[in-house]
Length: 589
Image (tube, rainbow, N blue to C red; front, side):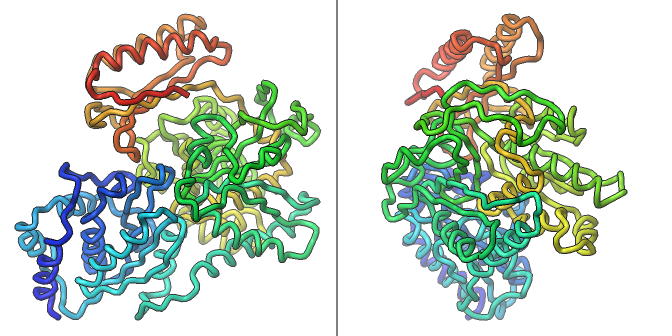
């Protein structure tokens, strides 16, 4: 079938797939993300677009992931993955938006403008995966119809995590396009690569004297299925040192449980322990070691249950040892938790790399950079710049911005505070590492990293290896610095585009009254503690939740809770005055 015949058939087919959301759709950080019932018509068009993207790139495989990550079960979303395993090139985002919003009568013209250099015998390749949401299989079937009308080859992966989809797209293109729908067992390749490498590394660590127990809240998402494969692999290992995973919230068949009162986003925002289903409160006990991931396993947060106030103090490595005594009472059931979030993961990895490089390289020109957003806790920024003396770059929220900035360094560490991130390595570093012993800590660290995208599961392995190599406990990790307390406010509005912000999202440009109120709140906070620069605040439209605005403020540690709440109330009053008819819900954490 010629391309013209494909396009003619395509135009006829699309007439039966009307987009239900009448408003113009935008392709954000997470692709398209909406209530699932509004994605009808979008899926088939994205399947077509994936084929066009593949044809543009010499028929290399392009990925489509169907997921809404940490969003509630009623939502879903879709995004494209470029052949290198990373996010869609930003220059192609307007192309996607223009096609999705193109009227039926204009489809032929659009295709003639964007598909003029293709050959009739070219076959595009699309790699398709989805999460456990109830709406995902139907959307996947619609995507396949779009691929089929383009005579594309659809490699169906079924249930996968978002990071797996990115990894598999990268892997498939590295070995050459597959010629049929039959794929090798990619999940086994993924599990064995990372699990075997981690096991070997742990066995060769003399500082690790015994097995590591880790509880994981899986948010009832697809990550539980992958972690079960890792758990089984580690359980088969014979020896005194292994990672023993205890998995919770794994009921993926109960679709309504996904991300509900559990998962990385819930724990990060509420500072509460996740609800365990089936109930097992006695499982969340101090001094247990906990990690939590989100619905598609691209976010990772570590936490520890707390029962008394604990304020870790900063200090040098000489004080960070395993003789530090636990300050909590073991055996009690926890409600609130202390976080080891994306900021602390970044600091942990930066500390590790600074220390390792002193022993493996004399090149003082190697660069280590940590990429943060406005959500980063200021205490982490000070630790990185003043204690580790590494570069810190602040960029807008959204992984595409962090990933791009991280590429400027030999070691580019990026983690959003929500736990989404990874580490990138320059070609110079990768070539250097190839000549190191397989058990060298730097080479091990590189081998355990999924560089295509933030991966909660491989990040768990990186964290556990790094802690074991440093011979650190949770107390040591906490003691790197003391977080400045913070609060968040979320307000649902009809149109998130009402607020305009600067490039780095730290200041509001419209409405200007809002930024004036924020400045006054910050000045009030600084005045009360008697020190300028101890507080910060910002407002930004969410990039993943269609109607959510977020407010974050950090206060001096001794700032009273009552005064914090007073300032928050003043801000909220102004918000409602500015947008009286657009607010449907507000909640404070």
